[in-house]
Length: 320
Length: 110
Image (cartoon, rainbow over all chains, first blue to last red; front, side):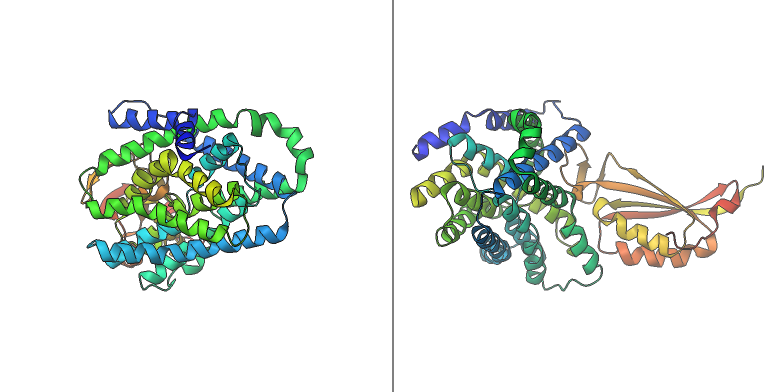
């Protein structure tokens, strides 16, 4: 399958089309809305399902390969903010604290992008190793500390509390916990819950991406015209830089094409849940609307629609 | 009915900081407080709306506490230490309460 076929297959898949529907609905100011509690429940289901399935597949994965992939993920998460910060300081007039905050977002990951990429990979017949779920969990936090270092801050007041809040963030606890349960129960466990975590997964993902489209569209509408184009462009070139670095690390550690594409996707994605909350505590002077617009309004749709097929095509070309 | 003069502290605060604020109030022995979500508003950074927010970052909360007038300066200094760099509004008003004993300082909650 060449890049064009991959992009076309991704674009006409129901999850992406529902995302685009949500985006368009928000941009034309439709009153379509998913109740907050429903969206929350769906996100819990998706994280639980992806964690559990990763754990089940982990049973068949070599531990050395898993450890190398996790180490590569941590390295990417810690290093990406320095690249993002350097690029922002060179190309925009953003204050240091805003650049550091945005940089932390780009080192960390978007779990929804990871879930969508896992689903797209499975649909293309390029399923990834189960340990990629653990890589996703490991990449959440290192970027936050890089961001603080770039802003010239030590952890300071409440540092211990912040570390605890990041480590025990609800998504991380659920992802790691479901992964452990899947690993412990293996195929026997999967057989017991297959209809819940398997059969309905893609339909629920469609519903969630519809909501994410609405969220991204509203964010774009609110911030239209408020951000400098040089900052907006950062939301498009950082995913490509991250994906290239991800591929550069995936090759020497011997990842298969599906897992390599997921490492690229993780490196290309930007956080819009854990890092924004941590930045409000650690760098309150940073303007949250700038970083959220970039990560949720620009990078997330880019990755979902164009980035994911591009990363799978590149991984297949380099490793297939 | 007998009423007693108290001070009502009203703090509009961004959601990620609420736990820090609660710790300050608990440490000061405030007898109680109530937190409710704010739906929408407008401030120095323009209009905001909690509709469709995926993280806590853009959510705002409102905390109410009723304290004795003699405790106000000490309380405001402690609250200011938390909120000085954050998005938020602090206001104080005079209120009359019934059952004065419900608003006396307590020990730090477990």
